Image (cartoon, rainbow, N blue to C red; front, side, top):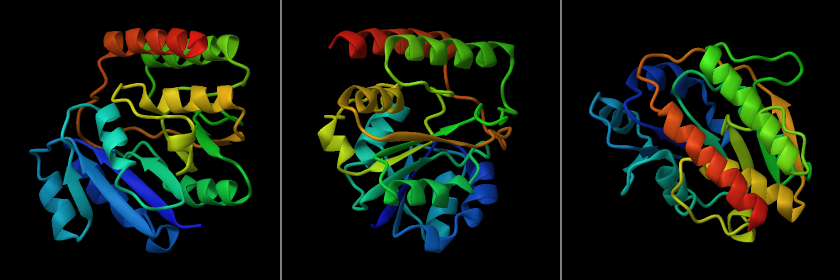
Length: 220
């Protein structure tokens, strides 16, 4: 099974410099960077190092992922953010889990004693609350519902009719996989503090989008 890694980023040149060299070429057959219109040298860095990069047509992480999954060719797709918070060591574990029969792999910051080193009181509560809410509404016991460090079989995009540009793109995929009865596994992974750049998730709007997603996916 071939592996495609999607790197989604926006103004993350410091994180790119630190994390991209750690992604071993033997871990993937294709690597594609989707950029949100960076102005900090990220695009120049990627092109200087020979990475395949394109600038997304519409703004937002959901639009980035939705466009990128239609450009990759791998049997396995892994979503990765190079801001320093995602551990690269999970990449081969995700691949192996899917080769062993799973359809979707969700990296969890709170499984088996792992934690988020980037949480504050607000984000820690939000992660806990929305994970509990998802578990109450859907028949799967997530330990982390919001990370969006995920891998999946490429065919899942068509199977689950994933074609949206919402910021909750990853959560929609997880919920539809649960409803469809696909084989899902969580694996542990610590979230580290970001390397440079600004946090780009507007907390209030993100919370509203999550509530809307949970309700819609529950009753659709």
